[in-house]
Length: 216
Image (cartoon, rainbow, N blue to C red; front, side, top):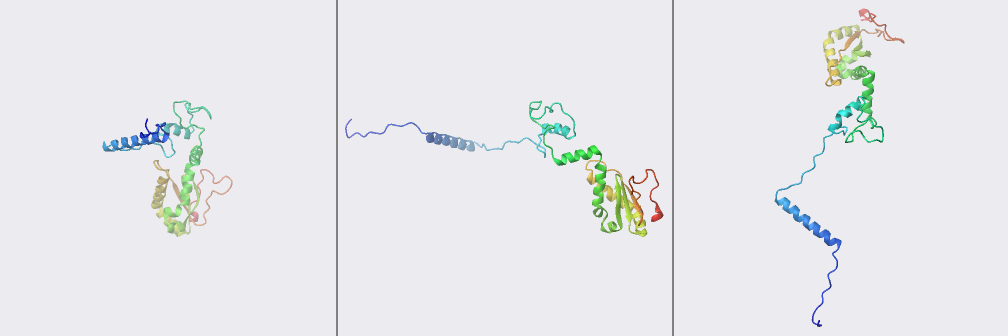
């Protein structure tokens, strides 16, 4: 080798950065080819779930659990795998307060009384401010409302208006019982100062005649 001949450095090993650059260049070229061919990105379709986050295939089991029914496929105990090929709800899972309250109300038969209580709370909205001013709900039970009028004249007027008042109460109960038949309600009009016959430890005697027009 003469002095006029130039020497070049020997090629060293390829670095990781060079490999990454080649991979990125290849990826960019493939993306350009895909775009040119009309291929676009599409999002993955997620499995449908209920508002509680339960998958559609686990919803029937979830409903059985919410009703308190035993499911041998699920009841394996805390910390143990469910007895099927996929996870799902068990009776050991956390439950919402709303679901547990609805279950307690249904088991104890409180639904009717709670519905009547909601009618009492919304009484002015149901019948209007003018009628509510002269017709006060003094007691209620499941399927019955006792209304006390402000005067004998208003007691008579309320009896004449009973069809429209009953229709308004029925409409409110239909709203409280969506998809179900609302229970019938008996509305009794009491005159001013009329006792409700519900005082005392045992309330009114079952089968008694109760208040009549003596006070109205």
